[in-house]
Amino acid sequence: MNEEQFKALSEEQRKTLQRELQAKGLYPADARIDGVWGPATGAALKLQETRQGEQKAAERRDALEAERLAIEKLKAQSGSEQSTAKTEALRQTTAAKKAYNEQSSSPLGVGTSIAAGVPALLAGTYLGSKSGEILNQRLDASQAAKNQTLAEAAADRMKGVTTRRGAVSGTTIAGAMPSRYAAMRVAGRMAPHIGLGAIGIGKGASMLASEREGDPSFYPEMANRAGGIGLIGAGSGMLAQGIKQGVSPGVPPDAKSISIIQSEGLRRNNATPTPKAPTPGTLAALKQEARDLQIPGRSKLTTRGALQTAIENARKGVKALPKSGILAPLAAGALAYQATRNPAEAGQEGGTQTEAATNAALASGTAAGTARLVQRYAPRVLGALGRMSGPMALAEGAGEIGKRLSKPGATAGGVVGDMYQEGFGNATDAFQSAMADFIKFLAEGQGPDQAAGPYTP
Image (cartoon, rainbow, N blue to C red; front, top):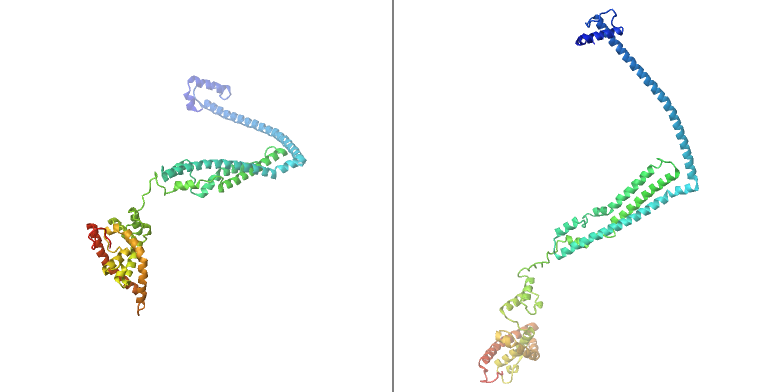
């Protein structure tokens, strides 16, 4: 306490402090107790602070010494206890090793040690494989359900009630549409097996690593070893089944339904696709037009020219005469007319050259220059006459052909061509004359040589 602190006290407190210092022998006994600061009061207070500091230091020293003594005492006691614990632990370890060796060397121990090796691995692998097969069956059943969803979506596509985008989106949301990547499909089928197999192998390895921890007894240790090895085998068996399921699943995705769903060629709502019209003027277009016009014998018309002619005639309402009843008898009649030395021989007796040519033309059934009236009434009659007279006319004309061929420089093609042109021209003239008489007959009911009654040439 300094002078300022002393003076801050009340007079009575200052006097009380002087008395305490005097009682402790720090303030002189003959000094006056007046409560006033002086040299004796200051010295007494300083001496009091010094003694208080020394006292505190001594107390700290005593406390430290007591603490040191207590620590040393504890160390001595702990050393003795630790020595006793170590001795006891060594004794127990020795006894356990002795019991371990005795158990492992016994017949039961030997059998247990063997069983905890390869047999445990085989048993674990079998259990893992069977578990994998059960998992594969569950996955196949799941894929069968997905295939049903795919089949229903494909049926909707075939009916046209949904689009490709809708079918793909629906089956994808339902989890039925497999990945487009083969690696992803395989990995997806193997994922459950990989997860379970990894858990088994990891747990088994952990059990083997902690084999010496805890109870070192022989039989518990063998049980732990068998369990660890068995779990590793089970994980391996599960992985093997996963590879099998991934590469060759029992129920693969329905490829047919997927192809129908993904197809771009299906029509919607059963709408009949609009047929593409053939290019006008082509052979296909002409054939289609002939079918539309119902032209008879159109299947035999294989060229554009023939089809165009038939189409034009059909549009004009003209019907072509049969080839077999007209062309061949026409040539036969023309040859018969030219080859006949006596014009009457081509027709009836006593006939003129005009009448003979007319009879030959009518016999041949020619259609050259005929009008629609003749085309309507004459074809059957002309055809029948031509078929009867044609062979006879050809027989007569054969002799004339032989005579002309015997001439110097004559050729078969030239002779036949000349005879055809000569006979055809005469036959055409005669036929036109005959047609005029025939029309007159139809109009008046009589022919050129008969006033009344049926017309007989």
